[in-house]
Image 1 (tube, rainbow, N blue to C red):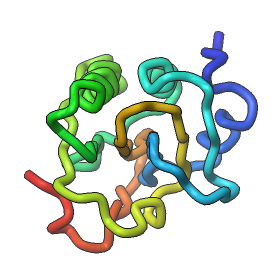
Image 2 (image 1 turned 45 degrees about the vertical axis):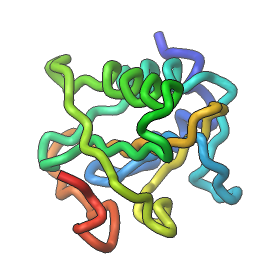
Image 3 (image 1 turned 45 degrees about the horizontal axis):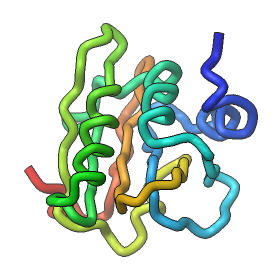
Length: 148
């Protein structure tokens, strides 16, 4: 039984993303493109549904990456921990999320699908899709954009 939060067009867009590619969940405005889908659900609901259907890469050293515009904001922290708290690998083990210091100028250029959600907090979360033999694609052009 599929979660209705990610059915129809969102499911089709996510299904078209190949293993090793990245998907994003963000509260930021993104120009309409074929791989961008708006969701009326909360980040918590989207994260829960996402990790039910999307396998997380076991070949990427950092398969989850998060960015918060204001890491001291309670709403932002709630979104970060809700997303990370829902993240599970194929064996249902919890996953840690890497953090970005800054969001690159065009963070969507390296992703295969973008899900936008309404939120008071300004965030972007990235997930490297796994399953089978795959090589993780680089998320951003400059490796130093990722914080340790």
